Length: 215
Image (cartoon, rainbow, N blue to C red; front, side, top):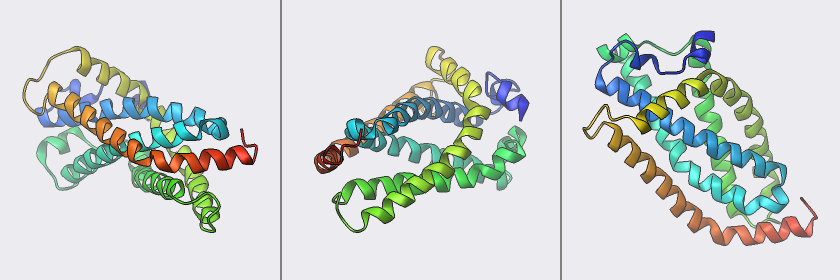
């Protein structure tokens, strides 16, 4: 675990892993950095939810496709390893603790984001709001605890690997640098579309929180 936290590059960069193993490690790092920045901003909006509810909802929408993309890639890596695909087996599994919390990170993320979307779409004074708000808040507590471990373990590695991928040209095929960067941009663009679709739901919540004097 300590070795994972201190690593400034993905192990796949060190031992000459196959191109697809490196590609998976690099896209996971790129997505991780994007999510780290986006979720940090999202965290600030929680502190001033009454004033920043619109930003909170919009950023959440933008991040949903990025989170979905990261879950898909992580699931692919998981499946390749446990199906015994040779190059992924050589790359090895995550640390035992990180492997144990992985499914719960995914589940809590889905519940957190899903409940947030439902909550935003409901009229603020709907009778269902209390139930969905409780689910959103409680799933956030679980998610935050798990993500703290996840981020402490992978942040340094993710930023180092992502920096290399953005500034260097090691791969030129579709699974290489250009393809990864384009795919992240597409995920963000889909998120922007979701955010635009959600704009009509923001007004009622902004007015409602303002009427309650929530800051």
